Length: 313
Image (tube, rainbow, N blue to C red):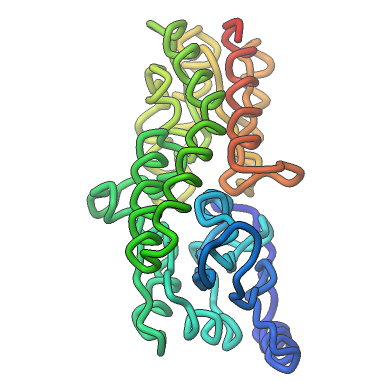
């Protein structure tokens, strides 16, 4: 089971790269516009040129950098699969001028790590997987762990301050403001955790697992199905039957459904859940379209989870 992403042809990518280079404003597929570092707003010095691989971290880095960072997110669109993305020559140009690169790591976006290591500017790199000590083969959806988000945000702030000492106080203020903005997110997690004792969940994919664990839910996804999803292979009929049994016999309190997963099997599991009156909570791997921020995206999903579990927030 794979994310449902559209991937253009090599010719189309080449055309995108050529147009971007000709316009002198390079951007990868689905990327945000590149920015030219100039002293702006309340920044006391020239903003740093920062590149972020994926939008799950891009919004956070933008908040932390504020006016002192010109942030370019390479994949700022849910239409591209970060696992399989093939960077363009325009992407390489962006990395070549970066002073800081932020990647997810954990084998989620290896193309970004490769571009950073070969960049002419020899940028500093914050690798989220390395920051949180993710083991080889670990679930790479690190942004769904509240603790990991906190740890990576601190690492980004530390690196920004090291690269631009004159703006260290500014970055500290940005981090404080970001922490305050995340308070509703943290409060919702605490409220959910207080009401999930003995409650279970199952998932069509492991995207939400870190958050489910953070709020105290017990994973009841049948082992064979979970293993197949992690390996991006189809579960066996026995795995599907085990999932159906767990849903229909009351072993699962809520089903977490990744709307960006392709294939008929996740939909089949969802239908079984709905027929068994098991509430379904929709989540996405990348920032949901229409979300104003990382916080907005996460808070919306957490409120839906609370409603599904009958927890007042």
